[in-house]
Length: 234
Ligand SMILES: [Ca+2]
Ligand SMILES: [Ca+2]
Image: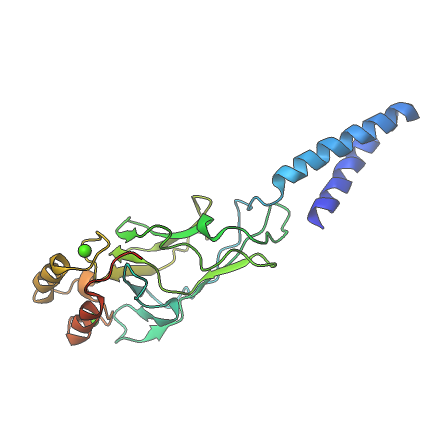
């Protein structure tokens, strides 16, 4: 619909611009206009608007944390936790609508062209480990709900990338921090990570080892470490 509407508008402009010409010239003018307009709008189709609407996400309830493992065995977004919130879980599923410059939904936009990054770069990712769950559907809809395949940690915020560009959400950050039993971020959970955990565990609070993100270091974090030992990228 958007393409047809745009083409009609485009041709109309050409038509009124050329009305003073004689009719044979107008015919040529119109045909040229159709070709040019269709070429222009064909280029615009399927290209996400740089000003995409901000994805839906539960902003305004404080900082959230998501526990990742390289093999995808970490927490789904529905089980994100309020950082320091006594372990309370929040559904942090990120929902996105991909539209073009005319506001028309783009179906089948590739999942691999939509991914998450941590603001400070502390989260590491397996190949395609933070991409959206699926290509956009007929309504341009996609989401992040399944566990990521990632390691490392970043207590900062999350960025939603589309075609390599971070979406501007009006200055509101996605207050989603990431950590993993893969503390050193080399995408495998092994004795090196266990050693790092041991050092941190007996010291001052450190988000990097607060896997069960209740704001304290205790056996719940040990349990998540144990569940992740041996995890690597698929
Ligand atoms: Ca590691
Ligand atoms: Ca904890």
